[in-house]
Length: 477
Ligand SMILES: [Zn+2]
Image 1 (cartoon, rainbow, N blue to C red):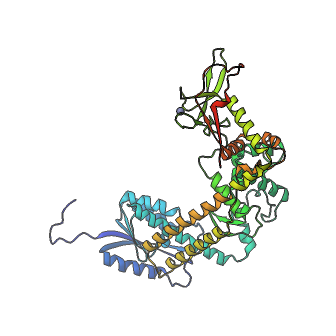
Image 2: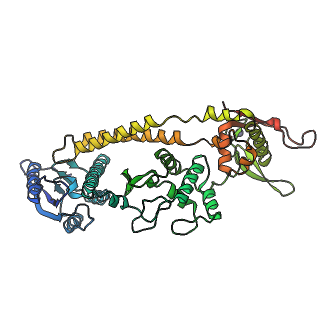
Image 3: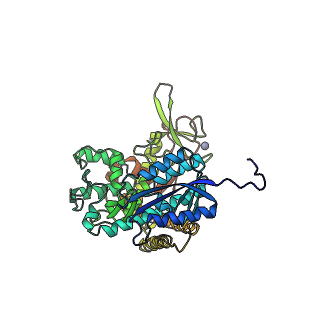
């Protein structure tokens, strides 16, 4: 850092002004002249020296139309011509959520500071500055979306807007995107049911393919494709723009919003995979616990004296405190669980453990929070915002966190317990036989804690190796 000699004027920061005329702000009289004049006034206050003005005429709001002025500005920033950029508001500079990313990265690289007349300093060299820039981008997007709604009042046109238009027909709906195809809607509802009670996408895909049910383009189902269809907002009668849900759609829902949110929360979980991870192909792997150290037990194979690979439960891959033949323990636990579920009072297990709370109150809460977010954005939008960027950032962070928590609770209470499939059904044995491993594991997990105790070595009197007394089954309350 070079020190300034006293008395020497600090060299003025070379700066550019960017102005854009658009229809984004109706009747605000925001001509380019006005934007430029305000920016020059700000430059004078900051002691910046404006050398160039870049202008785009962009009357088609959010058209994605190229902006030559903006591109030249970026090139000149990259060439190191400026240390500062002046704009009236960030929404003049950026029309989408992605643009600030490119712009910010460039400013960060070149050490360029952006000053706005309406939103103050945007400093891309700090995380706080980035956050602010992204929030401003989100607000601009909010305004654009609302403007589009005003422009396109014809609701069917809006309903037809989005993911499927000009592309493939959405599974569950006819080619108009609005009429429900009942047979396909039933497939979606059944698949949702299976996933929410612990079934796997792989099993659903295999089942659909076996039944000759194809995707909307006539192809066979892959597990990933089943998941993609299940998490579509359109299933809940919601309209989507880019990645966010922007309101009620004009087509009928196939699933309730609860069910859809529960699916999103389940399938959005990165821990969940379409195929079971290695080592999870047994009823109790990761569920049974070691009677010595309490660690979850996993299955690994040992080679016996006769060269046979025998899978067994261990609390650690090598040695471990206890080891037990996997097939024998699973058979024992299965018999115990089925015996319990076959008893007359089995339906009571469900009543105690699977009471689903009413989600109406949670939905009301979520709706209130969404409305408050809208109101907050309203306060920050427009030519003379009632709150500043910092207040907006703090407020929306808080509201978003609370909304997420409420949505999370809605999703969780909507996940059906795996138990609901087997508790109180007449012939539990045949129902069990039809369940895939994921769902069986769900039932075991809901009903019992299985502890593998150290057992004696060698055969028991009578010749068997497996000692039921060394497997403790504790029923969950
Ligand atoms: Zn152990």
